[in-house]
Length: 94
Image (cartoon, rainbow, N blue to C red; front, side):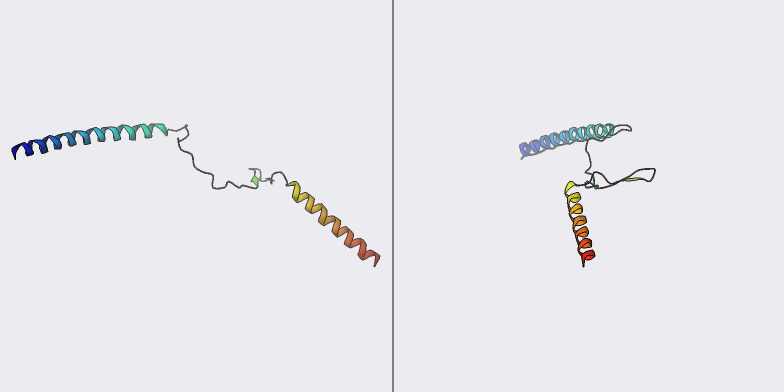
């Protein structure tokens, strides 16, 4: 019985020492993380841009830049304009 108590006491002391070591390591980790994010430096983890599909830019002066146009859209517009011209020509002939 006495041997069992000694083993339990040794186990408790070892566990207590391990907790102290763990607390010290967590403290070191917290201070290291705090030092990494200082003014003038970027954080180690980046955030995803919520506007990843931004289609237009508005400048401080108020002017807008809508970006380059899609060549397929231009082709469709040209075809629509040709159809409108053809309709106008047909209407004039009638």
